[in-house]
Length: 638
Image 1: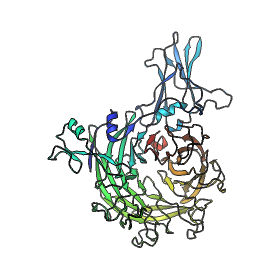
Image 2 (image 1 turned 90 degrees about the vertical axis):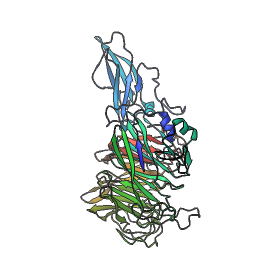
Image 3 (image 1 turned 60 degrees about the vertical axis):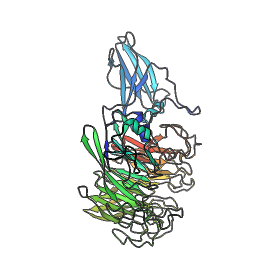
Image 4 (image 1 turned 180 degrees about the vertical axis):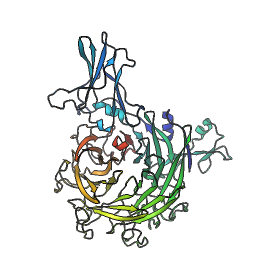
């Protein structure tokens, strides 16, 4: 597949409409009368002019404040207080930002650079003073609690799975439910109309193209959108489809991207061919729901033109589909359930959490299907060209039926360390490298860490929670930092009633409230160093549904897809809990060895059952954040 992409610095609404994608932002204050929005400075002489900038690619943007000249003023001072009242005396503690601003400055404005770490804005205050020879007088104040809306860019109907390139400039969004596709223009098609392959000649005028309404319906075939951040806005660069597109393949089920955004992997867990290995025959449907992965690479052609090419079609080495596809139950291996790419895009890990072999360890017997839904992971490597080859077939040291090994997966930036979660693993062991062969705690879950030396893989560690309980599903989601020495683990069905960081892990009084854990490796040994609960944890919230670490490992986002808060934006009221299933994200930051919750993140168009937090990724070491929801197939960037 070959796609030529034009520049997007002047993206129009028409382009997004044609792609089935909307780009919008929400301005103004909270419309919910029951939520406290703080002081109203809508009539202040100090107002907000804009909220985006492209002057520094390492920053998300700026808040720019403007005001009119004051007669007799010689200069102005701009002040900022991030929390409104740090010493609890009831008054803001303002600190001047930047140098004095002389009268006559054009434009007359003050700006504050921002990132996701400055979204703790419930009480933030800004102030401008005007000054003359006699001193300074306050001109006006402004609040920032409502401004978080400006920084949310929904990619409406874009999809649910996402991957954010570490450079912050490319975001890929998998949309496995896509069913309507635009036809493609080809240079040589003899008829002046759309053909049965949904292709048309380049001789058609735009008016003729519009008249033909060139679309086709392929139910749930799926797609993936590639968006780039340029000139302060997100723009659609390409829509990718499978080269063997078929209905119900769900292309876009999982996505992964290299640090520079130039290599992309997309899975289709419903793909049906019986091919094995690399670039086999994908035209048949003889192994339903066996799954496939497609690798794409982007080439800069110069002049703002880019080309995306599919460079590999990847299947498992033991491809197996659903033996009874009409029984209404998913029975294929689901190859592509999770995807991970190394930072340089040359190592690809693919999980198949429903794979059935009873093999143990590395490169065991793949053909014995006596352990239904045990799960497996396949590692592929690009040896140049590109030349992709399978490097390893990975099973845990205690393979068991129903463990769904591969439900969670993470890869270090180098590609040499792999962590795999098996949330239905059943041993009663706790901590590091315990006895994994007893099944006394069904569904407690486990995480396995593997390491590569050269091209050889081996299991390094077997990790359990310190207080494992049946059905906690520890390992449902996991992530590694870039170095691979910090591991985050989500257990969405953990039951403790506590709230906060490093609280009691041992009680079970809040069913499926969920938890997250951080482990760190030092001197070759792993140890749990932090335990997280949501600040408003409630039963059924499933905090830890997704966990994501920044590249340094100093920022953690955990999502809670069934959380019920009805506030909007950043750090709203956490206690209004009547929007069941709305979903939320929680940002934690580490200072030294101490973690604390920084932000409580909600969708700007919050609604019940949206499952905000269905997927999440970060870029620029946590300075940028993207979160999707399931109900609206929307992605929000912060």
